[in-house]
Each structure stands twice: as structure tokens, then as C-alpha cells.
Image (cartoon, rainbow, N blue to C red; front, side, top):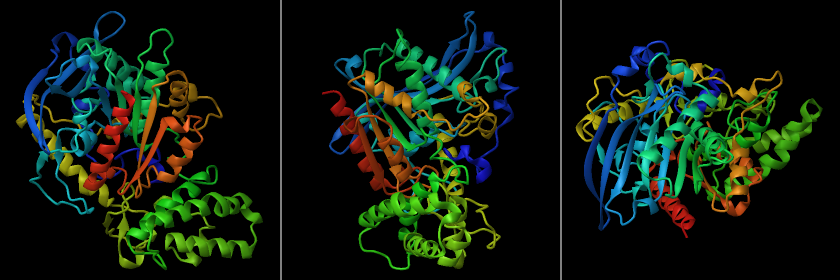
Length: 508
């Protein structure tokens, strides 16, 4: 896990399919741009949400982007859902949604959370096994509040480079943001939606991307695209909090602790399980930000008596033994925690959603080899997405839809401004703060899962309480579940209602 710190920002690591030859950095750009014809598949649908019926048009289409010479350089494939009919389309909000990785398509938010169809997975963190899987109407779709555009970055879905360009040309912090910004401008122009209320919704590295898009669109002086807000799910806008802990970055030890506590509580692994989870987590926050932080700051000057006292309190919050905690010098990284907590039961935990349990072939190992979350959800999403495209959206494309490009993830380039000798962690939160300072209607809705160790909720709270964004502009919400907390249907239901109210408030 320490080798894939940056990939923790959504569904990388073992269990995902490798990139196909069609999406390789050298192959996909070789197709002649002259021969490429933009594909567009339009279908009409109806669905019931309670007593209401929603009619909508689904459009799965290529948007061809041009270079400075007017030649096609890339195509971005998106799937949009537009409610029908509406009195004045321009007044209806529109939300652009994308996942993370980097290297991920939008399939997870699309069929897991906010699209009009939802993959029917068990909410109790159980591997569903083999196909067939069910796709059902999604009563929690955000289509009730906004039109939706699910965007696949280049190298994912059916998006790819054209002409002499290569997919890898767009695999980087700045390159990716620039091309997605071009797509958003092109979409707003083609669909005549420039004056609609606009939102960005990103998950994991998608939240990093959202901050960069605000920089490249809203904060572009004299040629701005203003937004009404952003929805950030499993937040990674400050990579110093959402990356591996270690001697050079001890803050994650502090911000991970409440997630350890929520996990140990869920698995009945605490020495004494308290009756009230919320109160227990508040105690964990208080201890982590005061006594624990001060103890870590002391380093080797911490006395034996102080070490014993802190280890005893860590034992209460994490369920790990005092001797183990002392051997770790009071510093338990996430990769060790998911292997150690249930070791005596012969079980391991998932990293992105610690509710999931599995079993490794090596019970004595230090790291989880077979992540039970990734193995539990990847196959169903990939199968259902490929089936949905052809059977319900009428998409006639010969190659399979690329849900995740591991090649893209591993080739991702750092930000151009971050290449200095002593450059540190990428942080896109300041762009959100600048937008909030200059746009009175700009607000931020922040979503975390209690059982997510990729982007822990206490770390997200820390980032936004130090973001310099007015507290009145930020909504912080924690939900039961992991990185994809929406897989727990009660959390999805509440989150959808909360985001709907957030968008409604913005339009008043």
C-alpha cells in the first residue's frame, strides 16, 4: 500500500483489470483523426420516484476537442441525463461528475450513486459473488435536483486521443484539468447551458480535479466559468492528509485515529464497546488532536510513563494491544491496521471500506494482499456498465468500456508548479477558497465515510477547518460506510437528500 499512496484516491491497486492495448499511451492516438466520426446515442426514459414520475433523455456521446490548428486532438465521451420537459432549460442546474484514481472512469458515481440507474449491491459489505447482477431504478438519483453529465477522462470509458496525439499527453495533474475544462466549455456551448446554475461533483482524486477545474475555469481572469458550488466525495484536495503517513508526515497518524475507532467499533474489536458511537468518535477526535498529537510531537523525548499512558488510550480507541502499539512507537499506519486488527480471527480488512473483511493466504504478513473491497465491487460494476451501455442506452461501440486504466494511473505526471527541488504535497483546496472569496454564491458540500481509510473523515474535517473558507460556505457531512459510502443504501438516501437541499439553497 505504501507503494501506491497516490492511487489510494480511488480504486487502484490489486483487483482492477489491466489496461487494454486499445487504450495504451502509444496505441490509441494512432487512429486517424480524419476517419473518426463523433458517436451520439440518444434514448428517452421514464422512472418513478415515490409518487412522482421523471421523464429524461439520456445522451451518450463523443465531444471532439480541437488543437490550435483546428484539428481534432481528443474525444471526451460523456453520458448525460436531462430531465424532460422543463419550462426553461437554462434555469435548471447542471452538474458535471467524475471519479478519481487518477485513471478512473465515472462508472462508480454513475451506477453506484447518482445516475437514474443503480447497481443493486448488498449494503452489508458482502461480496456479491458472480453474475448476473441487477441494475435497478435509482430513487436517490440527483436527477431530481439537477441535470447530470458523467465525464470519462482520456484513457477511460471511450475517451481517447486522436491524430498524432497520445493518451499519455493528457495524463497529468495540469493536462487532465485543462482537457476536462475544454470539454465543459464545449458542452455548455453545444447544449446552450452557459447561464444554468453549475456544479462540479468529484470523488477521491476527482475532488483534486474539482479544485483544479475551479482554478482553470472560475479563476481564469476575464474568461471565467462561474460555478454555484462543488460536491466533494471522499476528499483528497490536500494530499498531505490523504497519503501515507511516515516520519516526514506524522499528521495522518492523528487524523486516521477516529477511523480506526469507527472500524474497531463496527467489528466489536474494542476492549470495552461504548453504547454511543457518535460520542465515542468525538472522544477519539479530542484525544487525537490534543494528547496524541502532543505525544507524537515529543518524539524520542517522550518518557516511558507517558508512552504507557498514551498506548493504553490508543488501545481503548483502536482495539490493538498495548505491546503492539509500543512496538510501533505509538504510530500505526493504515496498511498495518487493516492487517492487524482482526489477525487473531484470521481476517483482514479492506482499505477503502473497513467494513469489508477477507482472508489472505499469509496470516503472518504485514500487508493485505487480497483487498476484499476491490475484489467485491469491481467485477459487478464493470459487467453491469458494459451491459447497460448496449442494452439500455443503445451504445454501439465494439471495444469494451474501460472502467479503470491502471496504465494511466501509473503514468500520471505531477503539477508543473510542483517540480521544484523541495516541492511538497499537492493541495488544491486554496483554489476553492479563492472561488468562495470572489463568488458570493460559491459553496462547498463535503462528504466522508466513517470507514474510509483512503481519505479519512477527520483528515477532511481538518483540511476544511483550516481552508480559510467561511464556515457558512461549507457543509461537512460524515456517513456510515467507506470510500464509496453510497454503497450503503441508507447513506446514499440521506446523502442524496442533503445534496438536493444544498443545491436548492444555492438557487434561492
